Length: 245
Image 1: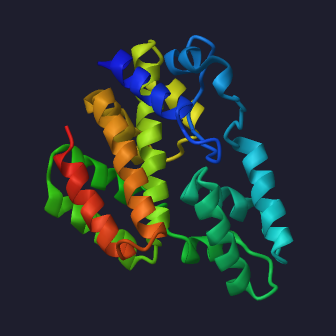
Image 2: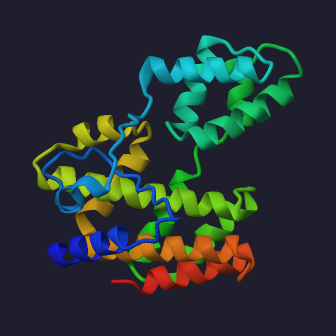
């Protein structure tokens, strides 16, 4: 149950080697969080709120400028709608736009031509297939991501982010928040992604989310240590995830 999982996770953290620094990325947590209460002084909590609205538009403009380009306000707003709040993907798209523009100011037409809708949609389709145990469908979505040039390490990062979002949404739903509240909290711009997140949050088990995190960490370690080739590690990961219940 949830208490056993919390105790197990807390034990892993408190018994880690002194040479190891463990970073846990989570949604909004309070002093009443069971894991936080269990760990006590063994953890340092820092808040890094997601950028949204005008602050995210300012971030886009500043990063375009730091890369040596300029962007119109309309283009910045369109870029935000297309990519969403994922700063990793946003940074890559900005670099691509600045290179393509060749010193010209980036306008909305250039963004519409060069930037596709965020690959998060493929990630959620993959998660749908994983939850249903449809390995072939999940592999197909993985192939789409890789063929579109998304690096294996970023696929794992995106999967981890979506699983985290599902966990946050699930917690908020249990506490009586509405979908609109969840959407605002997580900075979700696309209706499709919000719909998929809502469905996943209602169907996932907390024990499965914990197992997903462990398998994602294992796949990342396989890639970083060279034990498996990146694409093979992802294929094994997807197969293992579809078997997780």
